[in-house]
Length: 181
Image (cartoon, rainbow, N blue to C red; front, side, top):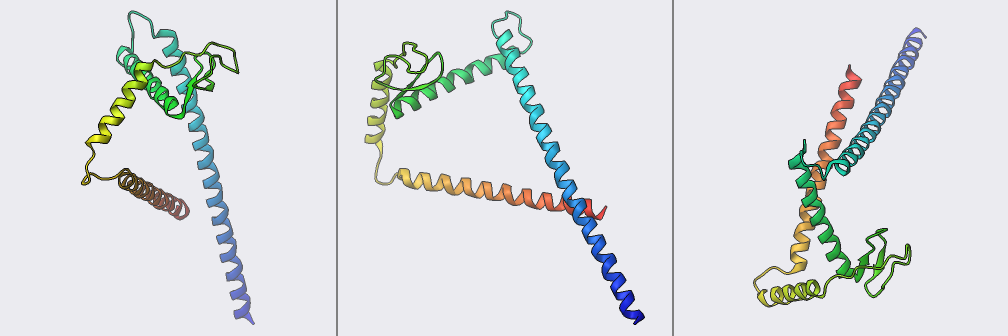
């Protein structure tokens, strides 16, 4: 009978320890999630401060962050060009006042009423010329768009898979380390 009592006490003790470890792991995960949330919040605040500083000082003669300001300006110009190209492909134009996407044939924005600035005919003609030129250059030996797209998707999938596996392993190691401590 004493053997069964000791066995029962041991089982209860082990289950209490396991329950406590599970609670500890859960609490660690909750705290880590809260830390990440606060770090994301801080990063957003820093980003907002940076945007405010940039807007306030982008036209200053003497700039403390002159090189970075130029890089931001260049990136914004490229982004605007890419957005215009995307709009042309989609048959849309973006309102300069409110940012609303409007059909290419619209004269005024339906959201704010601003007269829409249409892309120049030269830009669309140049884009058509480039497309025709690249079509004539393609050969039978060249990879098709589908092949290239499949390769890109396969590479992206493998990259995401590797990063995900590494993250899972790192998290498991951290949790195991925390539990053993």
